[in-house]
Structures are given as structure tokens and as C-alpha cells.
Length: 225
Image 1: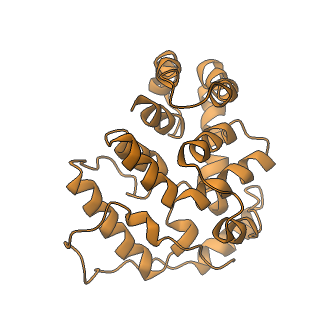
Image 2: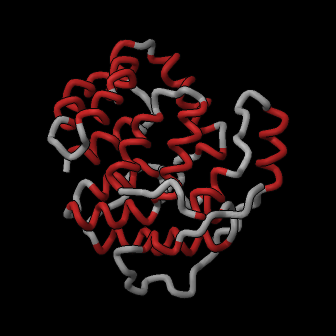
Image 3: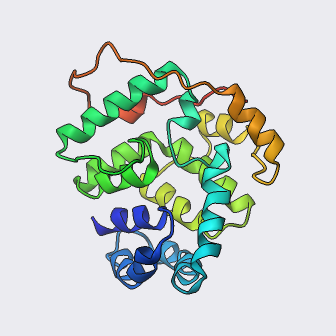
């Protein structure tokens, strides 16, 4: 499904390859998986990526997704933080990828949303929607937070909410949305938040065991910071 692959590309760090791929991404988005209104809402992002200065685009991306924990594209960040549970969830997700014939390449973590979307582009639509729905509350929270900032990236997350049939009124979504948004301009506050977090990834006792396709169904919101 090219739509998942196109949305994955739009959420990656902007480079010259992405700028050149925008015409192909437009074609992919027109395959009919997203409603016309959702496709139209993506046009401002497509135009900015196609015509904007590459350094400005990269700075915008970093400010949003790399310097704000509440906008992190690493899904488990929102539910496990840096706890040991996140390490086990990573192992399970990697096993899901392996069973699906998907080899993870590059430096991104397996829970990175563009990586998950790349995997879903290879799966049957019903299965892809089911897996995406398991992360629906996170997608809802990310879409709302980006909309508050009037970011053109909000349309991507809103499109994913549409594809997953996510319900914004669930308790899980409300818990995430109750968390205070990071201010990426407040470097002192951000440093304090990151200093409090400790990476405690460890071996999972169930590593290597087969996992179900709905691995993300175990997701529960992390406590508010």
C-alpha cells in the first residue's frame, strides 16, 4: 500500500531525496486509501517540502520531533518512557518485523513511526489498520499537539488517525493529551527533562518467542511527567 509508504516518507528527516520524491508521493497518496479531504490537507506540507529551503526544513523538523518529547515519533516513548518495559517492547516489535519478512535498516529504533509505516506498507490492509489502531491513542495525541502548534505536519497524523479509525475520546487518548506540551525553545527545561530520564533497556526474558500481530495492543499511556 503506497499510502503508508508515502506517509512514512513525509515523516522522515527532510533531505534532497525527499524533495525530489514529492511528485511520486503525490501520486501514491492518490491511490484512494485516504479520503480526498485528507489528501488535500497534506498539500501545504508537500508544497513546503518541495519548494522550501532544505536547511529551514531540517530546522523545522528537528524543532518539532527531535527537541520535543511530547512530539517524539518513537511510539514507545509515549507509553513506556525510558523504562525497562520499553526494551522488552522493542524486542517484541523487532520479532514482529522479522516474522513479517521486514529487515530493519538504518539507525532508527523499531518503534519509530516512519519505520512502522514502512512495515505496514508491506502488510495486507486489514492487518495494517489493526496494528495502526493499537497505536491510535498516540496518533490522536500527536495529531492534536501538532494542530495546536499549527504545524503542517498535523495533516500526516490526522491522516493516520483516519486510517486507523482511532477514537479521540478514549481514556488512553485523554491521558496523553492531559500531559503538558514541551516547549522546544526552553532549552533549560528540556535539559532537565532529559537528565531525569534514564535508559534502562535490558534483555527481555521472552526474547525470541513468537508474538502476535497486534503487538502494539499492549500499549498503555505513560504516567504524565
